[in-house]
Length: 130
Image 1 (cartoon, one colour):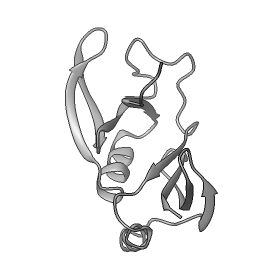
Image 2: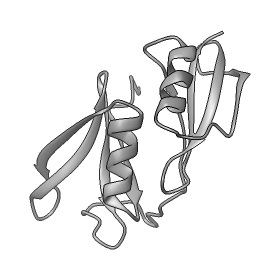
Image 3: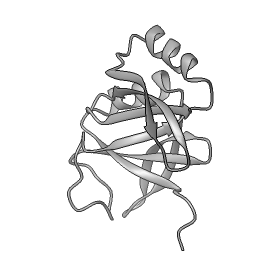
Image 4: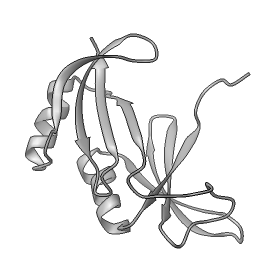
């Protein structure tokens, strides 16, 4: 019945720091669009065929999660480049790796991953096929 994930919503306490991380550090594209109830300008981070819509704590759009909370996510992204290039970029941007590279089990295969935290302390896993 379910084919794929189109987008997810991330709630942040600091819009500028969050945008900096996902755009500058992870290389996602900032997208602006109109949505929500009532319709207002919104932001999202696009990567591949997916995106992360952004909510700011206390200014969430309806409909929304029951208890939107910064720092409650644990996300795994498959890298579009070798993991060593990801680690090189994280080092260049002075973003600390908290674990890895380590072997893990992904949805489709064994993966090799590094872990970082975004500015809201969400756990971000970046992986490549093992």
